[in-house]
Each structure stands twice: as C-alpha cells, then as structure tokens.
Image (cartoon, rainbow, N blue to C red; front, side, top):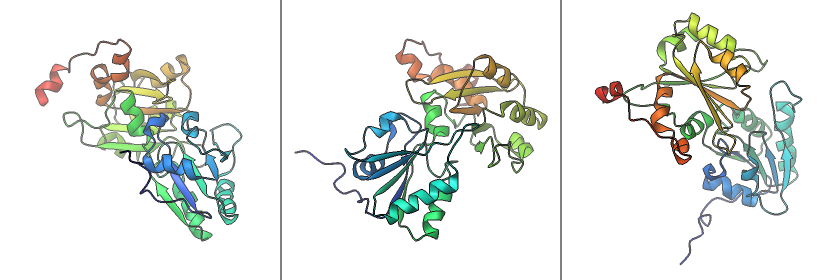
Length: 277
C-alpha cells in the first residue's frame, strides 16, 4: 500500500500567494509544504538564491519569474516585487513566492506579506531551513554546543541602503554573544571585523565563510576575525556566503561530515571540550 505524502496537505488556491522558504540550496532540504506548493503553482516568483534543482519540482506548465536581488547589480525594487505578487493573485493565479532560506529570516518576507495584507490578498507562510543554521550544518559547524555556547546572534551585514547597519549594538553583540552568524556580510567584512575587534572581540578568534552552502559548489574558508577580510579577498570569496564567528568553528575539524564522505579524516574531539562535557 502506497501513501501519498501530499494527500492531506493544504491546497494552494487561485488568487492566493504562498511565501515559501526553499532552504539554503540542496533541494533535499525543501519541506513537504514547499514541494507541494511547487507542484500546484501557476506562477513561481523566485529569488536568485533558489537553487535550480528546487525549480525542477515545479509542475509542467508553471511560469517561472525571476525576481533576484544581488548587491551591487541591477535588481528589481522590493516594492515592485511585492506589487507583482498582488497583480498575479488578482488575476486568479496560484502564486508561489519562493525565497532562499526562510522568508522571515533576512528574506524580506515580512514586507511582502504586509503588502498582501494591505491589498487583501490571502496568503500562507511556509518556513524554510535558513542558511545560518542549515548552511553551517553542511559545513560541519554547529551554531550551538552545550560545552561551547548557549547563545547565538544572527545579524545582517547591510541595511536597506547597502551600508553596515548602525542600529546594531556592536558592543553588545561583541560582549554578549559567543557565536555571531552574519548574513550578507561579505561586502563589508572589513568594516564589520574592525567594529567587532574595537568592541573587544579577539583578533585570533576563529571565523569561517561558507559559500554556496549545501550545494555542490559549497566552499568553506576557515580563518580568524583579524585576518577575515584579507583572507576572503585572497581566496576570492564570492556571495552567497554566510559568515560565522566563534569557538564553534573549531568543531569543524571533527564534524565536517561532507569532508569525511570525500576522504577527510576527522579529528577526535579536543581534550578541552571533553573535559567540559
């Protein structure tokens, strides 16, 4: 007896919009709700960060509309994207807004949802695996570990104007968060690292860049806070990249499960970590 995993899931109705997280890249990280939406949608408005493998789950005949936003490159305005969703829904389409990661984690899903509310468009939110958690897991870096940290901070590296956000309490982050996960921070990594060091973080604290997380193109650069900007430039690190600062980066030598699949010999847990367990 076979079971249809989608049989009892909600239906994407004509004239409505689903804001769906596609995860960090690997199509296997799509949720059942996300896959079900792809099978139903008439129009899929997708970000640049949505992996092409995810779009292969779209039903035959679905229209794919690219609405990617990349820093420093010509991109559609956010308001135009939001109003496009409204227009498609008013035309009776079943609309899927597919976003990389999670729509409510630095994905501007909240802005789009509020526009739908403003225009009376019914919608549904489908969370996704955010890159700051899932992408780091693919790099073998846990955002929390009970013997290393019980606190993690997620922040964005630029504001709506493309600048380093002044509203972030950099001193508070530096003092209070053993692990800092940074989205969209590559462009301003030099300024960000200077602020964190000025606020008291050690220049030799481990830091990692995880690029194209969870895809076949994934690369990881391990460095330190003080050398991050120079090493990223030397290695020609490119977006999309997630940046993580903290002692959890050291656990990668024991937890790089993807590397182990390709022959890397994982190190035994550090003695200091064992002693605190």
